[in-house]
Amino acid sequence: MYCPECGTQLITKRKFCPSCGYPIINIDTTDGQITACPPIKSITAKEKLEVKKQPKVSGYAQTYLTPWKRIGAGIVDIFISLIVGFVLGLVFMLLLVQNSIDQNQLDSQLDGIGILVWWIYFAALESSSLQATFGKIAFGLKVTDLYGGQIGFWKASARHWGKLISTLTLFVGFLIMFFTKNKQSLHDLISNCLVIENAGRAN
Image (cartoon, rainbow, N blue to C red; front, side):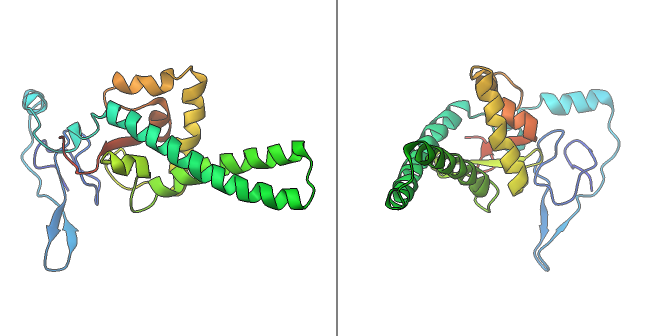
């Protein structure tokens, strides 16, 4: 199948053209199947350049221009995960105290719970049908692969643990989303992910 906008050959079941951002899904209402866009005539390099210069009023190319929304979503997610971790840690601590666990062992157990909650919260939600944590949902964002598709649990996990590298760079890995072409942070680049507007078009 080919993009009707720029003529790029496309991967099936992808929502947008990776070259120009044009929406490519064409649904056949008779059987619900995704059908291919017909090939268009070959275009010259000059014509391709003209296509790229045209402003996009909608589509994939402008859906991830939301660095400030990402920061807001991150703050909400931190707040939520801290509350969940605190509640689970409190319950677990009460159970351990009843079994006379020493303080050092208790602290290590609670740290482990916090890491587990932090990981599952992000990886499970971002790889689910929601494609977003509750913070991202609140700000109208979702996590996708480079073609706008849903990511799996292990890719979501790679993206999550990649945040450690972004943190070790003194948070420069997070801040580069203001300057990268697709508004990706370092952990997005590592895991080949994007954070885009959930509506599928620019606001």
